[in-house]
Length: 345
Ligand SMILES: *Cc1c(COP(=O)(O)O)cnc(C)c1O
Image 1 (spheres, rainbow, N blue to C red):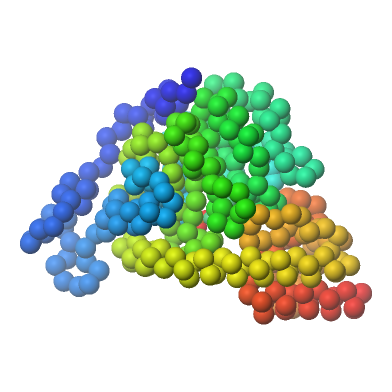
Image 2: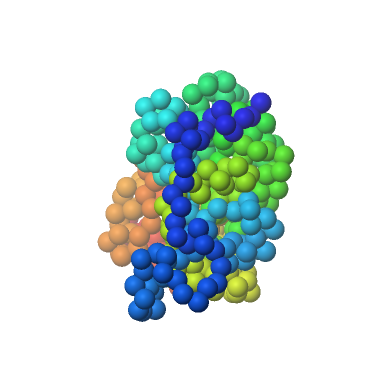
């Protein structure tokens, strides 16, 4: 049975959260002399530590109660907080699949936590039997599942993820950074039945707000409580909260941009397929393609010379390159450059 109190680090369980001025007194008043702020200026006040307005709008869009939403300074902050809450440095372990998003590994390293990497199969699917042996390890506290997965682009089977959630007594984190580009539904719908589930999303990709640094975690109120205890009191700046809220109120622009990116994606897929250099375009449930070429290091270098930057993923998947879907003009420049390289060789 999953028991949150058994898997959270003891020091975090016993920790008394810092009580900031803005969380001790919430509401309107005439005179605020409680936070040692400067009385002059436009940006002189501390921001809302719990980002209530922003959460209300996110709640409307995502159909998740505000009490089940945590906001981080990018989802990368949330990943780090989860390590710090659940994994005792030098002792506990986490698990992910490979290849996947590099921050799980970096965050594990920073926190001195061993990260077990279970290889995906040759079509990048997740195999339950390869995870099974690890699930009963009492030192294993976190499992990171990136779906749709970066850099492979595919989504994992909902059934398999559900089975891992059901059979694991630690925390299962599903990173849905690309969910708004996906044909699959978000797994937030599993939150009610799975107290050990944390679903992470971000405003950095489909919402076009990478500079604004807002990541979201959807989970039980007990896990939210722990995240709130460990986060820096004012982790999202007032300007960032304001910019994010404005963008989230314009859903029609969001939908229009996604539709545009998805239609450009189909055009790009066709053009990539027609190139001789491109040996394979992997199926994608995201705003990027993983492609296999004859020599990824060489193609990458040649594109850099033409001032076109893609992501060389050769060290993760042999001879593979990750290409983000750009504007029509950008995608055409890429295709033209690849054609020129073919004609030259
Ligand atoms: C881009 C990306 C993120 C986003 O991180 P932020 O810190 O929210 O910008 C998270 N997870 C994955 C898998 C990503 O590819």
